[in-house]
Length: 202
Image 1 (tube, rainbow, N blue to C red):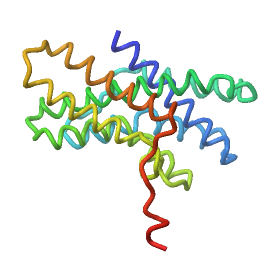
Image 2 (cartoon, rainbow, N blue to C red):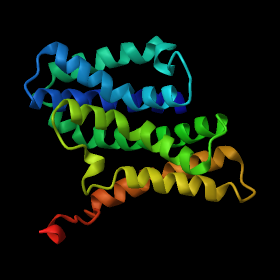
Image 3 (cartoon, helix red, strand yellow):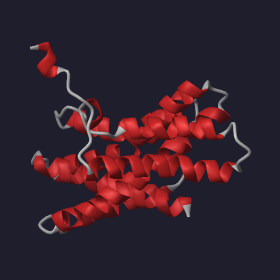
């Protein structure tokens, strides 16, 4: 199940990269590069930081095939892609929930401090988008008001809080991921965002 969700998350991230690249009027090669870094950027950074090489997507060609197919699909149906934005948002949200907990567990496996593990999980979920936005000359979403990285951090805190309770690890995994997903969904639904300090600095 988690492998399928991982693939769905990769599809969503790749297509979101394609959408941004097309808005910037990039050529086909540029679109493919942006799709690729969006889909695997966070996981690559995570694996490099904890010394896991080759990085995970290099050992499973399924992810490469999925990214190529997703890019081709998004370009072909670009005129109708707006109708898929709700589904893509849902897949993206599921993806960050999963990748946050996966990053945390990999950090624990490397013997890292819980705070570092939460940071690692957040990077796993968010930094593909950061790299995408930087390459596209945009301010990354997680550095603006939108609740994105904050949801990952909240899920990470929940993960470690639940470890003090007599709960099976599989349930901790699911609950922490669900916290990330529900926080992101509720924030978007009710238009909750972090306050901006810009006006206070004027």
